[in-house]
Image 1 (tube, chains in turn red, green, yellow, purple):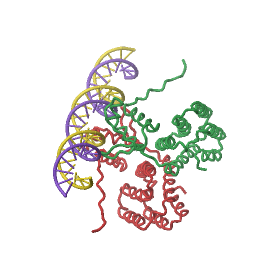
Image 2: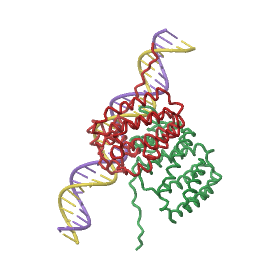
Image 3: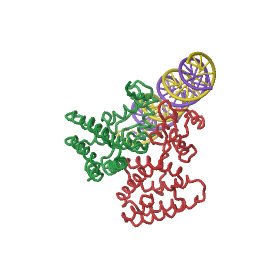
Image 4: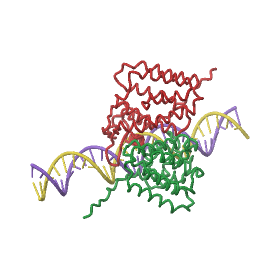
Length: 211
Length: 211
DNA sequence: TTTTAAAATATTGTTAACAATATTAAAAAA
DNA sequence: TTTTTTAATATTGTTAACAATATTTTAAAA
């Protein structure tokens, strides 16, 4: 008998699906920055009660994706592009770079294969008018690296950052290099394979337009 | 008539008070890492229903202070001290340092007076056996600096980080330099007054044991 | 005695009704 | 007409009952 095992089905609660769907709608731009989120409408559309929706709102609020003052309407945040470039991208670089440095030894062939798989995927939807799937693939590439770290703090940090980055790129499409994004990641992958920290950091800085 | 105006009373909802009280209990160590949070008990003790408590839990979950899997018990996180030192403190330095660099020009006398006020406060409870009030003062000193930045992203980031740092110091008291913490901040303040970025960064690195 | 299965209990998830606050519309006053 | 006040409406906040899941206890089987 093979040693294959199924992963246990994680017990997903309603609120988690609600969180996912609202966040996805925000990141896809279906609900635009500044637009309102009425919890009764969301609940009705989803066919659930307001309870889980409210819990989802609380989590997304803390995530920084929505603003929800007491007794006031809930709106999607309008992130300033400069904030992201000045503060968030550098922190993102710092986090990813630190993970790479510490967990370089965990980068084995299966790991590189996974990254290669994502790069392969990147080629497919290239002619899509939507930028959303590209950004998702992009961030999943980098998330694979982040996942080398077992530290809970790192993952919590990454989640906060990555959602904001996604929102940013999906809004500020001019910041996003659609043309070269496949070969950019292919290049990054090949540099990762060298395990030359200096070169990796250099490529990563360039990749994030930090020079 | 004087131009004095009262600040509007912010409309605090029940859940916000609940969030504050639970978080405070965690940071003070009244509820220890690994300990369970039973929402019905909390609700009963606070004399409210479970609704606001659940919303508070969702927000604290996203904050990384508690872990709450579906249908499973909610527990306080047990942060690994090394994670904080390796990942969080450097990010904290990066954030504060960037804010100082960008908003140095906003540091005026009233600002320095405010910091001096906090340093003065620090002298008072020095003989208290609890470390909690010291950590609060410490972080409020640095928060004053962070508040120079208007960027929402910066504040969101800071909140995530600062709560974790507080939890860390309140737990790992050996990491906390009780003896020199007044003069450490007094020194930092005097260096800030020079507005010499290089020196400030140097002092800040030392202050955070990053050398 | 140990292991397994079933029942009982405890806890979290969800819902729908009710309460409090804010917003809008209408009426009154200037 | 414009401003202010008041009433009506809409929306968020809170609650308590009910449903679903997990844990513990008990009983049965090995």
